[in-house]
Image (tube, rainbow, N blue to C red; front, side, top):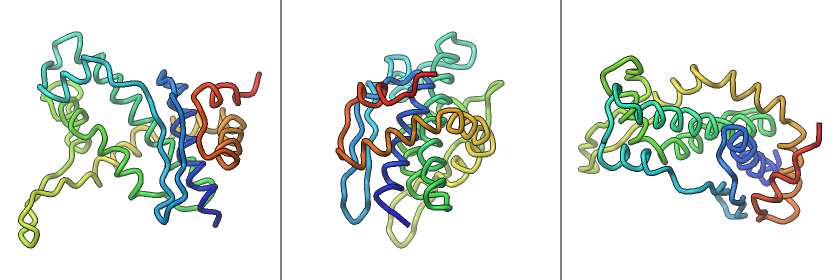
Length: 192
């Protein structure tokens, strides 16, 4: 397995599907460390999303709630794309990295799908348990990742398939330069 290519594919998947979802990619970086880490940078979350994250400001009857829910679903799809694009290279789904990705928005996800109303889906909320040995609360996102995959994997896979040449072009740019701008991501999109 080519770990450099797998890492590049992961972040390229985030970038391309993120662009399709409306998240302008600001840049991509891959760091060749033992963890083979990569980062896809997007603009800061909208104020309404931040308010839901910090204060759980909106309830399902508020018009802002739908806006935040749409943002969360689009971001989850963008996160799913990383592991699915990496899967093409490795043949294995990188659950650990996907869980790390989803952790970035787990509180917002809980504040949307954990709210009583038409969008309630307990499986999209993390489980929190107390680890007696460590003496701390632990957040387990396993069921969130599984439920997100059940709900949106097929849609994300279709977006990746439709944009396969774009993902591959971004991967090659990353392998060559290790850091690329959002403009380079967009300029790699084939003209159809």
